[in-house]
Length: 587
Image: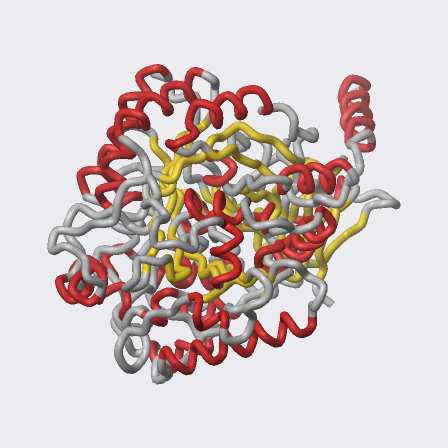
């Protein structure tokens, strides 16, 4: 009897010594997916010192509640891991928020001429409001507006359209995708390419008028960047860069993001990113990358090796990856459509070029792996994808245990055989669900360029899942603004969503784009959470609700798993918690 009483006393003492939580979440629909696919459902979660210490029922959570514990009633709503973004451009947020905003969406019944008038209006309005800015920057226009997406014939948008409203200052307008820019005449002059004698670039496209003089249309960052660098005072100030990132961060936190991957190191951008990490303004864990281009591959790789630790700030800012553009515009195996080729005076067998020599690519991948860098690759077309997979398989022989996490992003058009090879060789697919409704109605320009049959194969997702490929989400901000619930719904339906007001009424009855590639809720949530953490070697730290992991959590305003698929896009985040601390709360 005495022994039994002693045992009871010990149990009670141990129970009373349970470390009390800083926060306990109750009345929750806990929904989380681990790396092995296990789905966790629970009622309550306890957090202490920024880490999850309990996942289970409410009765079990009570022992973690002390006098100083903050108890949050989730009101029967979903409590899930915060979202993660495996491909975006955080460090250049100023290009979205500190420039002429050309991210408007014209009606499909509009004409290219009217779109030009709207661009001109916005450029002039911005220039008049900023008379002291030496360079006028803009972003958001879409080349498809001038290539058949709107009513009437194609229109050659050129520098002369911009000169009509601003001719005395350089103007550079980035397209929404970042792969095309429009320079006005002053900008071309300062960049040193306003002449018919300007040689053809080694990479990228410098479009010309009938006299051979560049007409302002410049394609691919590999060419756009060096030209912009020649324009005096082209760069943004450090304060502008910081302000742009903080505006973007506020938006991402409001959408429930806790971990992001920056894929665009530009001069000075990472110094500004480093500054906000050091002063504590950076709230989202950020994984950054170094860019390697073919023409400067040796010096780019050496810079990455020499500076790999220069931008590390604890676990909030790290660099362990190098990025490659194997193509820019999609480099396909099949030629583009005859109509497009004829309209643009291109040869019958024309395809978009690769941005890398294939042997150089293999050599550079091997150097990256030898240096311990993950490899992150931009690929849109099936030719680029095949070249990238070939090169990775060869280079990964130096990493037989696949300790590094190599990624191919975008994956617009992929040969089924390459999907299988990616699964067999542990190559991650970074996917953009927001693009998976890209049908012939809401983007007829894609069909006009690549052909309807090709377009119907765009953006495989289920095929990747079935082949055992780890799929990680990327918003590709600022190409898209983050919208994780729309991404979930589109991935499950391959159709437009009701929150996309411009297109929904037009497209709501359009058949799903490639419906065989629809995935399950678990598939896409896994891509939005734990799989991005895996891509960044952080799956043991964050990305799921498991005891011992960092407390990156979001509370929704509904029950995700029981919301009709057609209404998922209407859900919202009401609280974002990072390391146990609330970083966003809906008002």
